[in-house]
Amino acid sequence: MSTVSAVIIVKNEEAHLAQCLSTLQWVDELIVLDSCSTDATCRIAESFNAHIEQVEDWKGFGIQRQRAQALATCDWVLMIDADERVTPELKASILAHIQGEPAIGRMSRLSWCFGGFIRHSGWYPDLIDRLYPREAAHYNSDMVHEKLLNPNNLPVKRLHGDLLHYTYDSMRQYLVKSAHYAELWAQGRQQQGKTTSLSVAFIHGIGCFMRMYVLKAGFLDGRPGILLALLSAHSTFAKYADLWVKGRAQRKDVEKIISISKSPTDI
Image 1: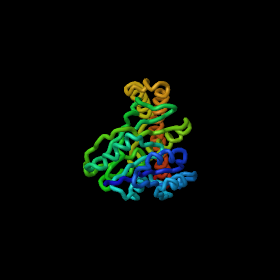
Image 2: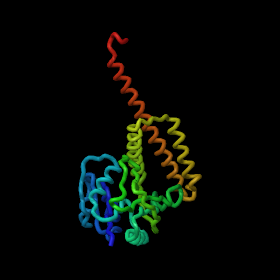
Image 3: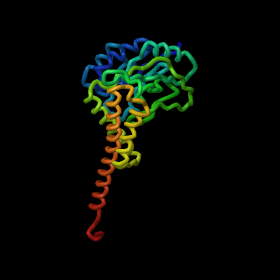
């Protein structure tokens, strides 16, 4: 019989972790990698008999998922976040999947946001690859929006059932999380030598709204749909604007260094 490790990376997730782990009591191993939480996260993980490790240095979501996977010992990895829940139908599909031939398990994620489940707006089905043979796949090293790599070209099979995702508890949480992701995204693009302009930021923001609210039928999600489209447009604009700001600051630093390095004879 094949075995499965549920692997979770966390920091200050006391509001969600118990509900998440309660839907994972059927797995063979619970792995929790904690980024030095200051709340009850680790105590909650201990109460579910999870294997807990802590790391102080944060190098992005991709690296953190790699570290967490390295702690797993079972045949299969189920990578999950603290604000997600495995439904009974998805559990049954996972258990059947891991007894078959090696393949990536792709699941639908259904998100709860601002008082209801979002079934349009491009949010559903939010297909994600989260179940895979431990020794055959791994995450890349991206700071944010990390991807599962499939170097052995394993087939991908769709699982039945939804992974429930409880995204944002409040507007403040959305804005804080969005700003954090925008900064990580801009840092990553700057390290790759990317630049942008405010006009590009504006175009991407408008495009995001039109795509979510019109093309992806966000209007069918009611008032939460238009709120999500507006907030997503703002977040998209913000990450490009942050890259533009970082680029200007970098150019100013270079100009200052060149100016200081000039001798009187060079002027």
